[in-house]
Image 1 (cartoon, one colour):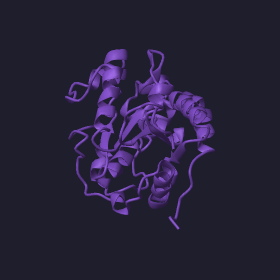
Image 2 (spheres, rainbow, N blue to C red):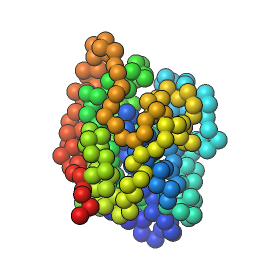
Image 3 (cartoon, helix red, strand yellow):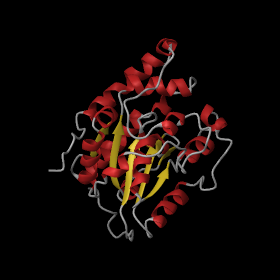
Length: 263
């Protein structure tokens, strides 16, 4: 477990899950919401990355409905997360690239040291395809594995140990075992009832959100039923982005956690 920053005043634990897009991270956040014992934040750094730092990217132009909590200052966003931790434990999931990119290498030791850090990964052959389905004009930086691996290395060095790494396929295959192992790794109670939920639009998302519509009809972690147009595999960016992402994925995959029986 990564401890709070030395000398910090955060009275409650802050759990950070660093991801790349299309890694089942929103489903994981949904599960954490079902626990009822933590405040859950969904991609608080999204607006900063797209609208402030990269307004020319497609997703920036799609963000026409910005929630009131969205802020454009890294310091303000971080302060809001820490402030919430003065009330109760916090879990947030975000894309590593939102805080580690050429226009903002914000994730220094002082920042990461406040959190109990973990990582969620997914095979690029699936994640990149899913990403292209939503954003055919994406650029490699948005794919996010290189930024995620940079944070993984930094956290490992800070802690002197490898942080928890969850692979999406393992999570789908054995939700109870993998979530229990995650809970053991970050030092929180495993709550089995949080593994299932009623089909609905989570309060953290908005109805009509095209990125997470599949989640609205699920009742828990399920084997992916997402369908892809075969033509996506011939997209000129697909092979390149998979090839460039795979070494980062494989390096983290070697450290993935296995299921825990709780015995």
